[in-house]
Length: 297
Image (cartoon, rainbow, N blue to C red; front, side, top):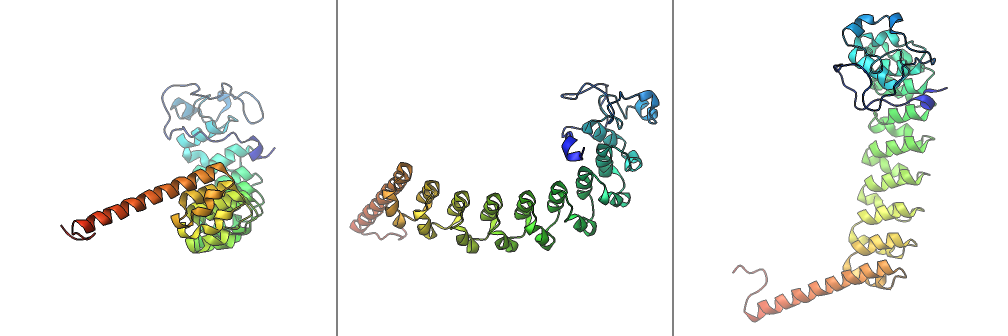
């Protein structure tokens, strides 16, 4: 069974120093079994001295327990022992040990058979070694790699076979690289591109096949450039256009077949007309009393 199939996650609430007291905390599982399902026997453990010092605790922090957060706590409290467990047969032990072991001893796990270990390693490796994991066979490893790389190093991952990897690339790639991903096969990736791409390229996405992408385009385009989207086939896109388009281009939307779109367009036209009437009145009043708009009293 692989790491991603059994991994129960790390404990976001764990602490770097051992707290006082024994026993489980919060939602900890009340059992002490090793990775083979056997009861954990502290009497046979090589770290009884650490237990006496409060640096390991049954149900709380134990390298022999099968639960990842207990293993994690053990290494948080005993990081000097991490290097001794890089070859442990249980993937959770290796995946946590690699986070705390000296950096110069962990690269040998780049070929570890478990993707959880390799993904954990990817969060620590220096760039020159991290680049070698861009083509890892497992998506979780490539995601971890994409979340650390920058700039041109991300270019080969823009065509990754997994959309989750490409999505991370779309979130991190420099603005100048984004046009190359405008036509990605996955709508979620194109939506991220629509959120980030420079305005000079944004109009090119106004005819995207997905209405959610076009809606994002409508939210970012300058009001005077929204007229083509006023005829969009999706009423949600036209609604966004109606809320933002320049007042001079609102009239066609007042005849939209969708009630909500018409209502917004009519309300904005009315508000624009009212504002224009007030401006004309103020100008006329200023002329009547001999002042000119912009004169200093």
